[in-house]
Length: 243
Image (tube, rainbow, N blue to C red; front, side, top):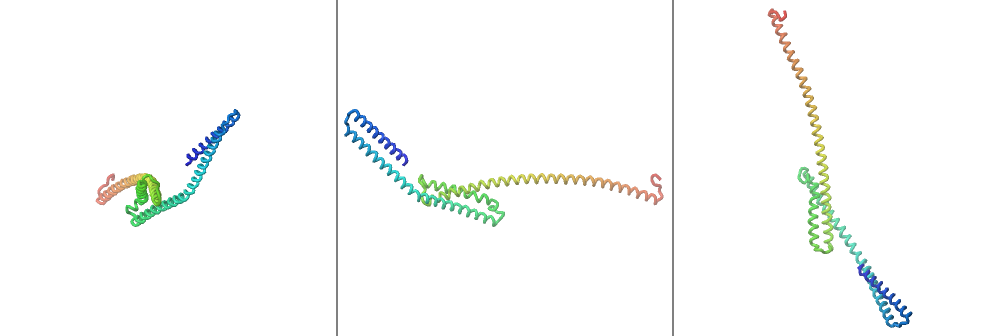
């Protein structure tokens, strides 16, 4: 529409330039004494008619543009309403499915659903939204979506995006949790090794004390045996060693 208006404006400009050139020619001919008044008058009339016709076409195009702008206003309102309805539908599907997964996981804390509720609240939405969106786009066949089809396309697109966003967040969280668990396990292992080393040191210290006590006990037993033998000899009147 804008290109046609530019073409008409250029044509009008050229016609006005030709009319100006004709006027100058008329003035030159009058100055030279040449009388072609009838021809020049016809040329001027024709230029004036052309300019008038083109001005009317420009006015008509401007009117058509205004009419088309006014006609687009209801379409923009419809598009906004369809977009809002599709967004609300996608959020309703997403939150409803997530509530169902959480309810199922709360029934049994050790179930598969409970242990993988984060993945179950992201992967199904992303997959369903992708397949739904692909089917809706295939049905368009190059045409602009109309009516409730635009609502379905908006809902499918948003549902797919919600699922993918939640999935990436789950993957980041799981990665961070795995890293934290690995660091915690390494710390616990170091503490366990240190405790084992301390216990081993205490056991070695106790073993040394037991060996000393055992040696002392053996010496005490040997000394008691020698005393018993000496006492027995003394009771029998036998001379003792060193006596």
